[in-house]
Length: 325
Image 1 (cartoon, rainbow, N blue to C red):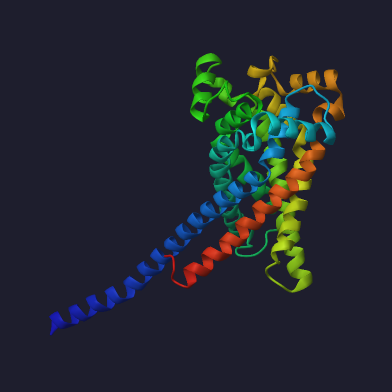
Image 2: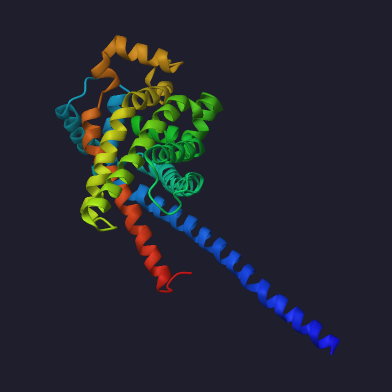
């Protein structure tokens, strides 16, 4: 009889413990699933957005790293001459390097943003709700910084491929090998400081603006989810504000990254800025190509945010329907 009681207690104890273990395991699985969804959605968002604007992006970089004056007419001429000389697909030269950088960068940035939102939401007591303005700005800045720190050498390689003839670098690996051998490994991180200084306001303001517009839309329309064209418009506004705020540092970053192939020797951020301003002026130097960025940037950021959101929604629906585990 004592043995029966002991077995019953053991059975009861086991019955009480197992649901707790199962619940904890379920939470871990949900968190892992959320991270994987964010990584995949972010990677797809970055790839689609960057491929859509690759010819404009390449043209902008070429102007940024040269002393030639920028205008819409000159940008068009450059694109047309490139097309006539090297063919249609040459407009996407360097896009393979861009994809190698953008896919992990976007995946990390969007995933990090979701995780920082969750952590800051728990810290400030807004778990599962829209964050207040300051944490909202902070989450975006931290996400951008995390992604930039982990993928910077790929950005350096992409810039080199965009401004050099295809005879100079045959592929991505060739760029790494030549830079390491001829200029040293430290060159792969040239321009890193202005990149981080530019990413903080750019990513912070981009995510902040997009999240704020979605929040205001939900409050005024009564719909929790915006339509696709509304997401595109919110993303475009986010890109316009974010890129305008950080553009001079983007020019400085490109000059420092491509110094080895343009014949310049840029040492520091302030020194680079002074040289650009003295040779080309403030507007024509530090803001060269900004008007093209006002076309390219909003399109890219709008596509990126919209693709991420819609992919997240699709993956959640597929998970609920049992198509993916």
